[in-house]
Amino acid sequence: MSKRKLKKRIRKGAKRAAYWLVLAVLWVAKTLHLPPRLFPGKLRQMMKHWTRSMMGVYVSSLGRRAYMDQPCELRDPPSFAPRIEIEGTNRMTEADIRDFYQKGFAGPFTAVTPSEMASFASSIERELAQPSKAFGFKTVRDRHLDLPEVIELFAKPAIVDRLAQLMGPDLQIWRSQVFDQQPGAPPITWHQATTYMLEDYQRPILEPLDAGQLFQLTTWIAVDRATIENGCVQFIPGTHRHTATVKLDGAGGFYAAHFELEHQPDPAKIVSMELEAGQFVIFSERVIHGSPGNRSANRRMGINFRTVQPSTAVYRDYDEHYAMHLEETYKLDHWGVVTLRGEDRYGYNKVAQLPARERVAG
Ligand SMILES: O=C(O)CCC(=O)C(=O)O
Image (cartoon, rainbow, N blue to C red; front, side, top):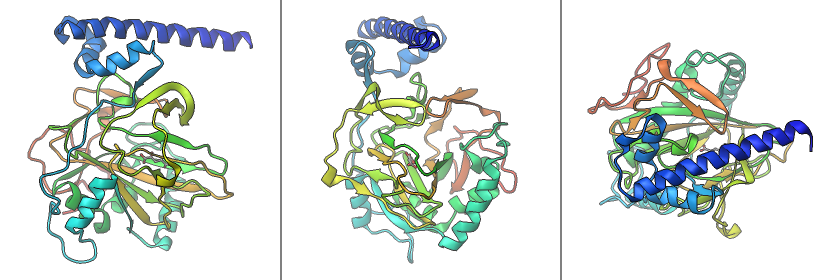
């Protein structure tokens, strides 16, 4: 091993040991019910947001295992009736909503035609080479904040009508990401998310009123045709009720983050969501999902966006955010949620100033 690699490994080991020690102290403090206010800055956040079971898994494994995200359980709603009434092709029935709650995802559906998607694809390729106006550097994250064509795609009635039937009439987009899987791209390991504490493991990005309810939905839209060969998104139905644990530094990878989910999927149960360009799937980020890597000669690009109800606070008291899997830090001065539908009766979230138009749909 080269000297540089050895030094890097020692630094990493020392950092992990220090983190373990801090967590061990916090775990004792949590067991003794000491109030978070006794701790400074980041430690106070961890005392507040790491549950005893999160600390317990990390400390008892000597820092080798952790919960994938803040553990919480999803309950069924009191009724599977759609949350809004819609007529026409985008209408979902009670059986459709029940099916979503059983599996954790719904689709495929069609947002735009493959030829409409082809012109979106050339525009997004061009724009991704330019710095994001919201963050000031080139990134695949949150390009809906500076590119009107992205928000126009997200606002297609085929998408918005279904999100509203599943989650309710008032919807805010808080985040989006382009997934550009070039030929040879490695798999995106099985993963799941709840309140997005997993991005820095200190505090959650999302603070729902009730984490037992459906408070977030992801829409994943195929920019290119997505097949098993080029690495379409795959789901393990029914795994969205509980939060799994991960082996840290495991064999799997999600870009720069390395971990392996401690859930062995039954291969017969894996659903491969093959999509034509312009089609989409809606899922709860709590369902275990990933993609098998691109073994074809063609690119597999997709764009996702994440929606909450205004009752969920997003990035409360954050000035900036670090995403471990992309190794990027975003200053949040120009970040805000975008109203996709309905109204905000809570006022928790800063609303973004979009370049073309602020409200994109009725
Ligand atoms: O595009 C992919 O392969 C993974 C997408 C994903 O993990 C997500 O949308 O949450």
